[in-house]
Length: 400
Ligand code: CTP
Image 1 (tube, protein in one colour):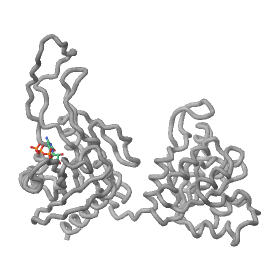
Image 2: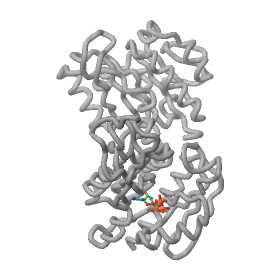
Image 3: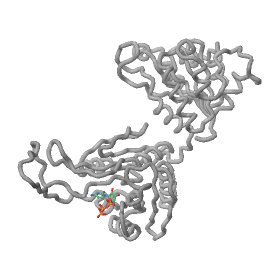
Image 4: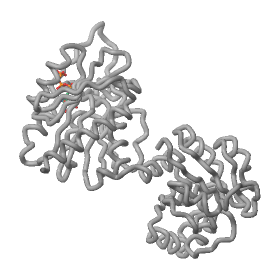
């Protein structure tokens, strides 16, 4: 993403206030961001806002004479991506019909950059057949159209038409700017803890935040894989573009993993699964009648071990995580062997900067041939990208 050049094109809709957040996300990611606005957009939000956020001059007047080159031509050719957000029915109709009557529509018609359209309008406008036809024309010409969100709109009606959240537009842009080297691969990731109920109020769980698993799902999706994320309870938002399956207990997770297993090429089990559950879960709240309380726990199934023992029936790469406080390598190697894995990611969870809840991680990647790759301290996003790189190579070697 760093070093890429994008243009945010803003047309005159009430959702243009959300474009300020979008521009901010790109600037934070070190992306050179330029903003082009229609005259109507400037009635909703001022160019000054975007000049301050992007650090660049904003153009909203075709006959702006400040620039040095013919900017309605050069901008769209220098950029990697143009995002029209919000895209009103009017700019969509102009783009579909080749109308170039202001800076934004003229720049778009001369552009060589990829184009992402983020519609935002009243739900009746969005369902209008002319609008639908225009959008399908633009898709046929290779542009990407994001589905608008549903819900209460600024005009106090309900339905489709809401501008997608800036974080989702950002993620979709990232997908368009990233090499799709995992296209055609189906990847299943598990993440987060599982939670085993004691009674309707209490449960047993662990400290897993889900961050590593979510980072893996996001990295694989960005690179073009079709991703299913099976997640225990976390406070994280499901990554954009993944098929999300929410589960609670280990048994729920096992069902979901096995349901999604056919046609999966790679399974990454980053979840911290509860090894035990209460023998019985009380149907009513347990009252504090006595001074002590004993819970009898019984063993949960080992999902990964069951996947490993039946691998020949469903050939796919199996990747586990080993969360350890001591004897990291020996314990991880043992899990790699007994669960019949292709790779294990060994995590020393006694460190403050690795393992549960942190944004960083320090891991060792251990392979079947005994090779160990020691990775330095990295963000979980960086670790995820590197794990995905290694899995891609393993997959290619398996296929040759
Ligand atoms: N795992 C699983 N099902 C379980 C327990 C673990 O699928 N019931 C998976 C985890 O998702 C992880 C790997 O097995 O990928 C190792 O999990 P970990 O908790 O480190 O080890 P355990 O096998 O549970 O062994 P122990 O708790 O004794 O270290």
